[in-house]
Length: 412
Image 1: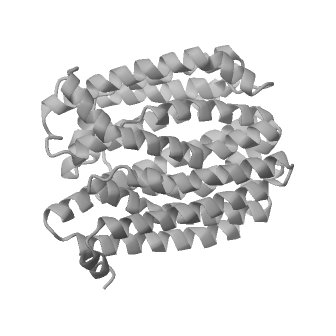
Image 2: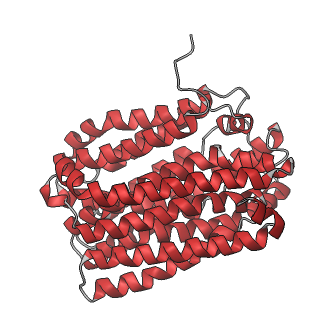
């Protein structure tokens, strides 16, 4: 008997929504059970893991969707082989750099706690990619069972982990449970047997495809997370929790839109390019993202301070200036999503990195503001300006990528 799931059109949205809602729920549970200071330390652990994951992201999940031979068992085996190597490399980096992380953020998690994060990339390296292959033909059930199932397992571990550790180490248990469930579900839903392949030719191909994406991923870390590292350096752990929660909520729609776009927008643009119908599809995609960006920016500024104070407690309520800055930043990021998908669809995987480079430069201003002891709202303003600059750069790159007539037609 098949489990009832939402329709194929809604699954690429429902799963990211569930994932981001679970991340919010995790922070709520930890805020009430562990306190603001321990929540701040849990955030820095999650940031450390995210840095390692993004620094090794070769875009294998996107290559299997975009490549003409993405449906072949050979390419899938080669991608799974590289996943194993990526997991081993990520685990080694976390173990080797654990003492440095502990020294960098004095008064926070110890080296052993940072090293324990190594289990997570090691597990993720064993993922079966058959559920990604199914997305090529707009079949999202396997993706939903894999990612949604892992998210639900993580949620189920939150309370036991918090009770067991009573501190920031609870997040290590929750993230490890998520990784283990993700791997298990990916194998349970797979149609093909799990095979690994290691060839120099495949490695070169994946590196050519993924090297620009790694640069973009590092820039994305800078744009998504590095400002929280700055806050951790110049402010206390409670300030990091306030900043992190507000930013997490602001970026929630951007995260959902980005993940859904990988499953919906990228294949749609790829098919439109192949059928020479790109202008019409691009016009519809862009208008949809523009509407979402505007609605979220206004709604976040209006309701976020009250909602955060109500859900997380008065100690973690941000001021209005910080919220407005984050709302504007998130709106520009939502608007930039289709441009990133367009660049990948036409094979210009370096364009997102070129745009995000401008966002990363805003960190210089953010660090300066923090060193001067300015309020957190100043760092939020720097984020908004950086996101606006990156979006304008993405628009410029799209104009040079597309044929001028096609681009004009997409707005007609």
